[in-house]
Length: 212
Image (cartoon, rainbow, N blue to C red; front, top):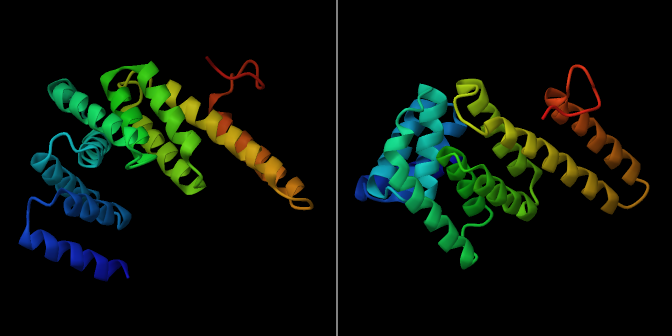
């Protein structure tokens, strides 16, 4: 179970405090349990061991941005963001850590203020993602960033709109592959998701038109 797995990871950390994968795994377990303070601590410890490790850096930055609502520290981490971005590209080039390498690369692009790089990486990640729960998780992360920071992260609004659009497109595409008689219901569910996801981005003056 989850408790046994966590004990196993904690035992591993007791033997080797420099085990980055164990710090990340424990941080994610803490997040799942709603203990974001402990999650931040373990992500930070993993990042301190390996500053350019994509999973550790992405987790640490996300938790610090959302929980502490700080952005001024990002400029100081520009070298780590660049190094972690290159690490993501290296992993993706050999087919490792996918699609997560592209999700992390997109996130790092957002934090570097590079919208085109961020969109390109996120587009590749979404294209490779078969799990709707994974898409939902990353869309929720962008929503949490928006709630915490509002407009303090340039391009965040554009990326949230992109994720909503690509999720809807993916759902509608999948609905077309469902066999009859289930296709009609799949289409209905996709259209309901479209209204829910794109609703926040519609113009109040023209309800059928997205805001720019």
